[in-house]
Length: 486
Ligand code: NAP
Ligand code: MG
View 1 (cartoon, helix red, strand yellow):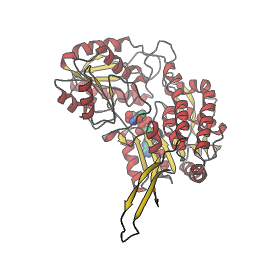
View 2 (spheres, rainbow, N blue to C red):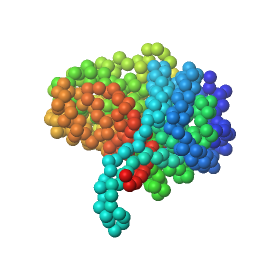
View 3 (cartoon, rainbow, N blue to C red):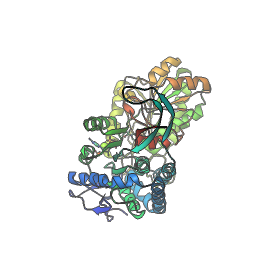
View 4 (cartoon, rainbow, N blue to C red):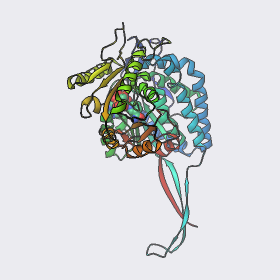
């Protein structure tokens, strides 16, 4: 597999040679080239936006039932191709096989099915009639209204590395279901499976221009797409890039959905089920090498449970096998690139200089190839230190302590982020009371499990807007009030 496969841009239903050649996508475990990804020119990004613009009127007027059928067909074709796609997405992301077979592909298909179903429902909102007096403007009477959900138009879907297909599906499925057309710009590190996904879109018979994919190795393609003739940017990625996108998009009043960074606080009270908390927090190491924005990477432990929790977390971390993601017993694979491994290590260095204790990890695993970080646990961390304030996006957990509830809340809220926090406590009233005080878009109580029907998004610098479930459809719509005498 790999270098012999060719990948091209998908623009207006056609496979297009990139005007700027290609660049190598590297397997983070083997450091071998997985394939050559196309390097799109700015003109080609604009072509993709123009194709989506041309396709919009017809697609947006297609009856919802037909759009639902198209998305179902796409999910069917995609599902048939899953066995071929798993090795590719595994190789470009470095995911363990367990993650590659489930979260990388199954959830992608699930998302298309969910939004196919939702596309079929009527999302307009009827309003009760309103009695209006005579005014200088118009005669009085009983005035009705319906709030129609209209598609926004052309949506640029810019995604991060980690779960390329699933992230893409989380944007494309609701956007298309609502009647928008899309241009997808995957992350440079792992774009290949998304280009293969475009073959499924072609085979499923999506009209030309409804779904386009452009790729590139640097910021140019994404930046050109934000500046192109589009109506909305749906972006998932880091906060600094999100801020830059918002500035550019603001000039054109382009709509924004921004899912940005996180520094998930996990508050553990002294009455918590410690084993449950350890398993939840441990997912920050074991789940895709911590390359997930929602992980509880910043533990805020009550001082009476601190030592027991740290002992158990350390034992858990040391038990996790690091290495070849293709090996059955591997739990922690590589991080995405050498650059990212170096970023994690240099942030760890700041923790060392500040005086954190490394209870687990902190030493680069001794492996022949690949970009590995050992599951790392830092204790004695102060909230103002960089290791408590900045995202690692790797298998690192830091531990702070608290004495009372107010302090726990203040510490949890004491970063610029607010994406996903957690509370572990046996007292459900307290857990709920604390959850309500957290400035965070999502709070898990005694679980890191998700509810895919719930809205997902961030407070503060973690983003703007919500997707997930029916909220995803809403995110890709504009409300239109239609007013009439009743
Ligand atoms: P990133 O560096 O922000 O890049 C994300 C995407 O933006 C890539 O496709 C990137 O392509 C593109 N991009 C960069 N500069 C751009 C610009 N000026 N204009 C338009 N597009 C631009 O993020 P990442 O390193 O891939 O992913 C890790 C980050 O994503 C973490 O901060 C993590 O927390 C966040 N994340 C958030 C969520 C969530 O749901 N909230 C989920 C997953 C990840 P180029 O690199 O080629 O520029
Ligand atoms: Mg990047």
